Image (cartoon, rainbow, N blue to C red; front, side, top):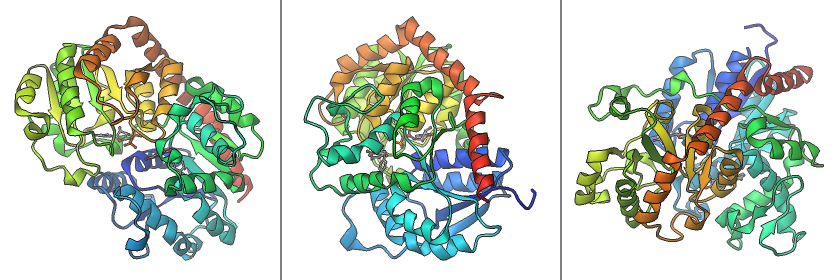
Length: 459
Ligand code: UDP
Ligand code: G50
């Protein structure tokens, strides 16, 4: 690699939903001849993260890995039971420790790209070092539109109504607003608003999206005053290093099981890396899968962090239901290789919480989605799913845990996504557009070159 190559440091937030897109970005940067330094905390919150990092490290020996030593845990600032939130908070508190770390990286950095929840603490760091400051926004451009507009909502600039009018995009129903933002004085709302006000201090925002999936939001962001340039670099492609090794030989390996199923016959059910469902809802889901009459591959999650997953599936799902389920499908509680599953010809539909990585992967593989947003940004992402033709959204199910959705209804909705030909075709059109975006001369390539030129100019 030449001495003057662009050198970028990456600092992902905790959680697979953040780490995965950061590592895919690292892969993209390397393929564009950039030098990459990856900054990570010594220990990760979940086992899935540390395993992925070690696979990544073996695939990219040329990538420089730097440890970020956090300040000791301070129980007085603990404000949540969610281990990922606790980690985010402690990374924010430790941000200033990065000043000597970043300044000693050699060759000197052209830019620093960090996670979207770290804006306020990282700006003084990059200012102190005169370093170009970028975030990777790991959700949709629609969510970024909402995020960047939200401070004016918090200031009371908009009147109470059923929808939020954001310039240039279709209105966001107030029922789609992340619930934590509506909790008075919540720390989440405070950080979200405080950071949102500082966006103009950034040099740019990178988003894993593409024109054909989110034309409306991407266009609107170009026209909004007071925002840094937004680079739509997606879709980020699933990478080789993500491939799981240990499970491949297992008798119940999902991929082996899928090999025995007819084409386009299986519904894949998975709610991402950190969304646990209540037991009663898990049982209704099982009942629904049976009632749908479809084949299915169901990843059950009862705890937020993987390593805590100790309980027998029979106990969680119920023995009787579990026996019935075994006839028509496969139920697992381990981490699965989602990209390989979505790529499998037997998969027809995807019941998803609409975490943005899952939406982006469904788009990449052209798998139609039944959206069941559970919390956070997921309803706003589900709006993208619906509008783009990637899938359908059963809006009356509400947020996860808001109401008990009965098996009967889940069964009906599953049948519908599997049997609606127009949905199948529109999801395949999204796939075609996704592939076009990353092809030579596509939008991903064009925007990436623009970004790298910007970094070179400022070197
Ligand atoms: N994922 C996976 N196996 C699992 C669960 C999740 O590979 O068993 C991956 C999935 O492919 C996606 C990421 O983990 O890339 C989850 O990110 P997403 O944004 O969909 O949801 P989050 O976990 O952040 O809620
Ligand atoms: C996770 C979550 C709730 C939630 C979100 C999550 C988002 C994403 C956007 O990712 O809304 C975002 C979150 C925090 C932030 C900036 C941007 O500081 O559990 O709402």
